[in-house]
Image (cartoon, rainbow, N blue to C red):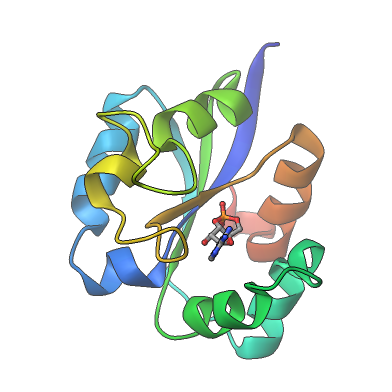
Length: 139
Ligand code: CMP
């Protein structure tokens, strides 16, 4: 599998709730290296574009409103098999179903306000990293 890069987003619920530092510490303790990070406030249009794959799902408009409701923190993480490994570390979408010790189990409020996003494939990781970062912002 080798060294991969993937995108995480610390979502508006976690940023507003003062959980950013704890989540970053958790990710570093899990062995990921930080390769890029920023704080941004997505417009509704940008949030809608980022989650366009979910356009036809019943939760789409609520998800777009939530993701554009306040600042979020996109982060590029690097490590061995990082795409799959990050998904293990963050846990299931719904914090009630997430395994003990996972980021969502520890820090998420609900299935929608679930603290963190992670890319679901290497191809999507490349696209999602490009959505937020380019040039000298990406180490
Ligand atoms: P994420 O991993 O960022 O990918 C899509 C997001 O949609 C997901 O996290 C949740 O924030 C949200 N989501 C997925 N399923 C549901 C659902 N059934 N109800 C509400 N929000 C959801």
